[in-house]
Amino acid sequence: MIEDFNQNVQDQRILLNPCAYLHNYRKTENDPLTDPHYTNHIEKAPVFTKGEIQKLRDFIKKYVRFGDRNGLIYQIEHGKIRPSKSLQDSLANMLKGNQEFVLVDEQKVFYEEALNLALDSIRTGQKRVMVIEGGPGTGKSVMAVNLLVNLINEKLTALYVSKNSAPRNVYASKLKGTMKKTQIDNLFKSSESFTESEKDEFDVLIIDEAHRLNKKSGLFANRGENQVKEAIHASKFTIFFIDENQKVTLKDIGSIDLIKQFDEDMSAELIEGKLTSQFRCDGSDAYIAWLDDVLQIRETANANDRGVDYDFRVYDDPNHMLADIKELNKKNNKSRMLAGYCWEWPKNGRNNTLQKDIEIPEYNFKISWNLSDSIWAIEQDSVAEAGCIHTSQGLEFDYVGVIIGQDISFKDGEVITDFSNRAKTDQSLKGIKTMAKEDPDRAQALADQIIRNTYRTLMTRGQKGCFIFCTDPELNAYFRKRLNKSVAYEDLSPDRNIIAAENNTSY
Image 1 (cartoon, helix red, strand yellow):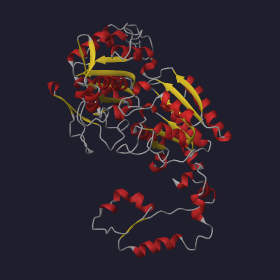
Image 2 (tube, rainbow, N blue to C red):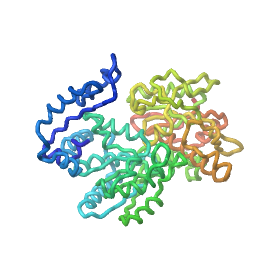
Image 3 (cartoon, rainbow, N blue to C red):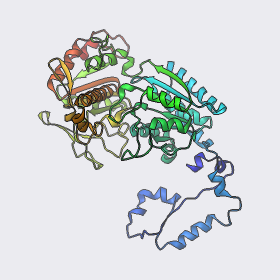
């Protein structure tokens, strides 16, 4: 991190040689500390333990021959933060020609405006906050990654920030290329990282999924004051990408009104924009409007029109849905299974899929949640694992198969929710039972919104199609009925010589 971001280290060619001295640790035979798995790290940063003081002395003498006449420690401590040329070049090469990160239409317009405003903020010292609102698939994350790379290419200190680790890990992996993991990881930070930051410590903070920001930070929610406030405080230019309809936990407090409040408190200039063009769900705004109507989130003019090109299927057997997702995944590794958080997720991480967490006995169906130590969304062998809202939000696939659990059902003509059917290991509704005792109407309203938003989010992860299986038979029948009401058109596109109406059947 020092090599990549410290100007004095770069300009004066200060050489850094790390090591670790574990003065109370005594090695044993076949010690896990020196396992071959860590060879690359130990070769660069040797580990010296109890009884190896002479080896440590020899290591220091190898690199430190004279006293610190030039005040190197002072120079490193006071070096200006600036991304290195090698980091700039590596990132630019990763982005170049990568079709996943190409900007189109209004994305490019807002991107250029944000880039120019950020550069002007650094030049003039004018603190600014930019808010870009956009629904699923409008390109918020694509813009965020482009801004990250190109701001660093302009020698600015920029970071990609999100509350949810899933998009951070996936985008970092996609940009890594020949760079070391630690290098790229330094550019992707949790929203909890700025509780102690100084004012305007960073040039630019790019906050993706800003609706997921929390008030407090830390494992016990006891650190910091407010993540929105802390991000604005820490950066000369802060850009928030937000969709308030994707709040999926009780802790999610990110909102446009809250951003405006802290923007005013810090006398920052506010710029707002809205992405409207839909690039997921086959470019079909109609599908998202139809889905909102079907989930009874809001009444829309698209009650009977889910769009022409989007492949939506209702399955009577989850095994058939999984089989189709596996087959589609063979093409480009971009199809995945998702599920509502209605099945327990073991608290301890695991490294195999033998443990089947999601079971639907009447169909002899079993599948595990995604492994906790993998980049599930892009791992080659993870198609047989199910992701949840926390591991899929902010990401997109070609096709998704969504298992809808017992927290949402259909009765007497209404889609109803029941938070008591969520898994106990799900932290999304932590505290809802206490709230229900004190204010049952408010608790029910909040839980209802979160459950509907959760399924809306899961069912808009697919660019080309969404398949569903509902554990509640009446909800399955309701979706099928609403699907059959959709207007069918003939699709004359050259790569799909089918009738859209064919997709209105059950599977």
